[in-house]
Amino acid sequence: MQDQVATRYVLLVITYSRAARQSLRNVCRAHEDSVVRRFGRAALLESTGFGAFQALRLQAKHGLDVQVERVEPFVESDVPERVREAATAYENRDQSSVPYRQFASGTDYPSPESLRETDV
Amino acid sequence: MILRVGGQTFCGAVVDLRDVDVDASSDGASIAAAIRGEESRCGVHCPPASPVHARAGYVRPGMGLSTRTALAAAGRSRGLDTPSDDELAAVRSELAALDGDETECPSAPTTAPDADRERLRERVAELRGRVQALESTDRDASNARSKLRDAARRLSELETERVAAVETRERSRALRDRRERRLKLQDRGANLERDARAHLVADLREEFAAAVDSLQAVSAGGATANDRDHPFDVDPVTAALAILRIAAVRAPVVLTVDRFEHPAAAARWLAAPVVRL
Image (tube, rainbow over all chains, first blue to last red; front, side):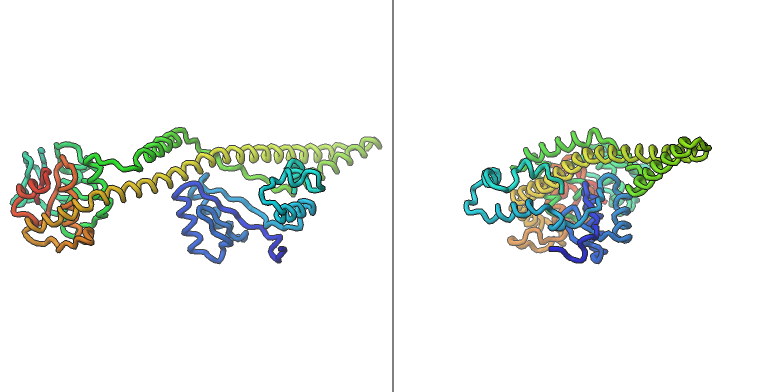
């Protein structure tokens, strides 16, 4: 699942008003090249000067109604192996009705609590 | 109504200004604005205008009209309800409560990147070591001490900024939770309004078609042929007149079109006071 852009950030822009959402739509339409992905009232923009320029423009226009975060692509190999193994094994379980807690108990798979305490 | 326009005063349920020296388009717009209670150079005493007036209260050649929206407003003027109304009222009241205590959050203070703080922290440690080394060998440490003081002060400033930035971030999150709720409610409200409008339009569709037919019968000409399958496929003037006939209208309607034999006939057909220019 690793690719060449694994270390590149993207800008997550989330809007919180109808006007800001409309502005974001307009920006995405006008600058498709800089848009990584569009959602209803949010979008991922490329983390370039141009992407940041658009994000900051939106924030300047709509203030708190625009939230900008810099996010990192998820790289599976950064996740501890036991977490990855547990996920695969649980999805391949025989009985679909078994909750994870029950599935993991008495095995080497981490408990839900231990998963929650694991920082990745 | 009592109408004051161009220095003259007119009274009655039907005011015919065709032989009075007024400008049909500019004075028509001013009279319609005055009827809606807006700023205007004309004066009108009349019952309060309904939302129908904002859409169809000034019937003139070349007018535009959102027929369905206006027809829904006509339905509301008659007190018609829709199945969406209860939830719509709940959404509106929650929105009003959310709008109440809006506090604008200060923009996040600009903070130095983590790397800068880390470098400064190392610099402080290094200077501290140098001061200790100089003091332990009884050499002059005043210069190093002064540099240490400066670096430590700068570091403490950066740390304070950092804490402030984190607090701002948390405050922003709480404020955005509210805005997110508000946006959801606004979207829900818009959907409900659309549903309500569709419901009212469906309720009044037949009545609207009948009003258009009736207008054709009385019209001095100009009303477009009506297609029962597409009742909304009529010109805006015809649609506006049909909507006004359906609506419960107490404030005067301004007309600059020739669809009736005389203004009194218009007033009778519309069941509303009329100003004819």
